[in-house]
Length: 148
Image (tube, rainbow, N blue to C red; front, side, top):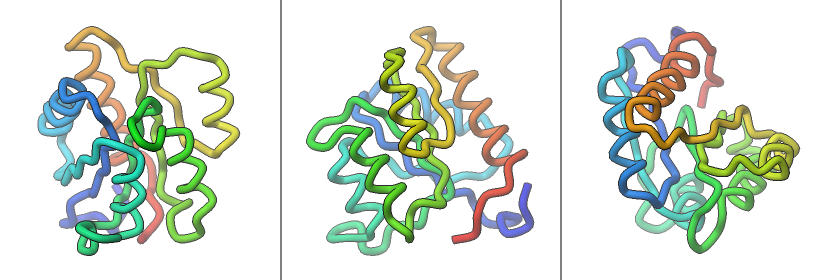
């Protein structure tokens, strides 16, 4: 784990509109070894307001990692990813696409927009929890995250 995060919780932003997937992600992260704080927004417009600290998100934490669903209301995850990666203040935040889509154009398109990785959500409860724990282990234990 990087020195900057010792004693400091890892800030994770989950951009997800499915209440079941939000609950499973919380469960998976709660069981992890890394102390983390999970913020959740349910659509792409809210995600960008959170990241830009606008309106009710003026005091929002700067996320160390973003878990982004593609199929979102108001502004979909593809648009959110494009905005994040074209913004000099946000583009270094790792973005993990966590979605049900297996479409090749989504996989190719998100990597073209500089997503850091693409994970298809398993439908099985235990597999989903395992995926979340694996994301946490890899991104928060092995990878060195950029400083804010």
